[in-house]
Amino acid sequence: MTVQLADHVVIGAGIVGLATAEALQRATGGRALVLEMEGRVAPHQTGHNSGVLHSGLYYRPGSLKARLCTEGREAMVRLCEEEGVAFERTGKLVVAVTDSERPALDELARRGEANGLEGIQRLEGLETLREVEPAVAGCAGLWIPQTGIVDYVGACRALQRRIEAGGGRVELRRRVTGLKRAGHAWRVEAEGAVETPHLVNCAGAWSDRVARLAGLEPKVRIVPFRGEYHLLAPEAAGLVRGLIYPVPDPRFPFLGVHLTRMVTGEVEAGPNAVLALSRRGYRWTDVSLRDLASTLSYPGAWRLFARHAATGLGEIHRSLSRRAFARALRRLVPALRDEHLLPAGSGVRAQALGPDGKLLDDFAFERAPGALHVLCAPSPAATASLAIGEEIARVALEPLG
Ligand SMILES: Cc1cc2nc3c(=O)[nH]c(=O)nc-3n(C[C@H](O)[C@H](O)[C@H](O)COP(=O)(O)OP(=O)(O)OC[C@H]3O[C@@H](n4cnc5c(N)ncnc54)[C@H](O)[C@@H]3O)c2cc1C
Image (cartoon, rainbow, N blue to C red; front, side):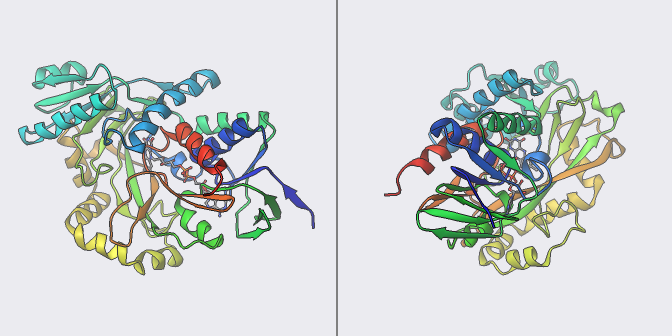
């Protein structure tokens, strides 16, 4: 049997894997082979996200996440401009609905400034908010000019073109099922064998399993959470001009349904967050016994459920009841009616969870000889992907101390 050779093998053709392959090729002049188990690029998280180019407002100043988001955001804008990928710098409105949310709004403004965001505007009173978003409700807000919307699948296709132009390949329907160290190389089984001195695991929701194939015992486990969306019916889409967000709960920055006008012109509402019963759990009926057993046998998952039972039940209620989902949105836009919400798609978040039940909130990886495993690339990893790719390439190419 012939063995394919590659200078770098990257597992997963989501936006992080593609950005990493492209950065590795640029750094070394070598050729990367990206192995993707599904039949297209960006089939999972990247192709099912909210399509927002995040500003970096929320993240702790000085954190890796804050730096990668800022650098990656501007790099993504350049990629879109150079490659003709649809994007728009829409700006975003964060709304304090009640006076009790004002301190959190102030803290966000401080963080944004510490993260180098220029031109943040503090908006006072309903009239001022309505100059930006005519149908919104609230008492104060922040206007963030740097936020935008992006066609991330288009960005992935652009990265694929760049990888191929540099001599690399993106091969679909090649699921990695085995990883073995062979001297100074890795032997990768993926519908045929590949040998490479450099392996990078960017397998998203499957990254812990791929790490285990390579003999690691990762400290975290991936627990899938589904985020469900609704589309606003055409007669209600005019109620939203751009992006309207609530003040986030710092314990769960990814919770809190928001309204997003997408590059297609449609307005999406959501996502919520409910436990997915499969790593491909896009609907309640998608169940994988293996994935469910993996979640339920993990003490960290039970600690999370016990600690946040009320929040979790609220999310399940909004998942099963359009009326409850609409009620949450009416806090921001009172004119929205239940029947304005049409079912739309969903995305499955690869949430890395520690054994203590804590959600990993920053980019995390583990290294082994000749290999780097990305075990957590949470939102805003699509925004930050090009900076994350540079960072992974830099670390992966450093000799292991
Ligand atoms: C609902 C939702 C909304 C979000 N909204 C935003 C947003 O608006 N803005 C933002 O910046 N971020 C957002 N995010 C986060 C962002 O989308 C993800 O952090 C990012 O897409 C992660 O990219 P990835 O390449 O790591 O993972 P993925 O896109 O999931 O890619 C992993 C790939 O690995 C492949 N793979 C897995 N196992 C194997 C194997 N054994 N062999 C071969 N291939 C394999 C999978 O098929 C998959 O294609 C959102 C995420 C979700 C879920």
